[in-house]
Image 1 (cartoon, one colour):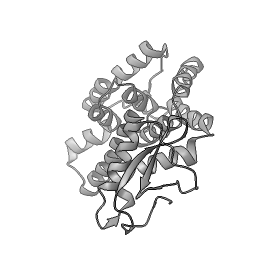
Image 2 (tube, rainbow, N blue to C red; image 1 turned 90 degrees about the vertical axis):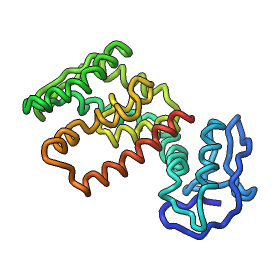
Image 3 (spheres, helix red, strand yellow; image 1 turned 45 degrees about the horizontal axis):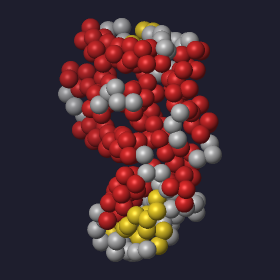
Image 4 (spheres, rainbow, N blue to C red; image 1 turned 30 degrees about the horizontal axis):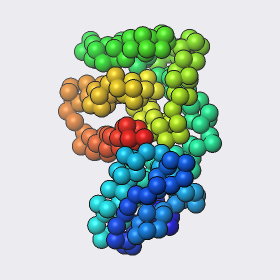
Length: 238
């Protein structure tokens, strides 16, 4: 039974349950039939906590199954179909974000924005330096800043420690924030979810404080934050 991905469909099961799978993994069953990924792989979940959470989102469906309300299922499918066996490629992509990381490119004005960036971003750089011995250079404006190879190697080593499921979630958080360092600091517990999101969107928040909020932009941010929250929860449950 393949989990739906993009189109809603009438609910075709009564209950989702969790069963023990192979090699200490867990599988989700819909009325006793194990679900599979879109690529046809077994949905082998590495932790009971994550499996329970995935089963819960299936049980929370109404008369129709809405893929948008199955974010943990989608991430699990991504981990199994898209990350497992390609971990080095995903790690490389995350390190590429670190090489041009958001928190290393600062505004030169106005003073309020400069101060807001420093307040939210400087502690992240200090944590990365203390935690991994990885100093990152900061530049002004958009001109490229070359980062120390040793620092990028340190981030590569830290990220390589994670399994395919954790990497899937970390990659989503990195892409949504534009910052491998923010995503890593959140994943490791240095930043709570709200502080991480504020750090990733300090420019937008400052602009909104000056000129007022744009409704459509605000709705897009809320949708992206929902994705970030799901990825954060996924990571913590693995």
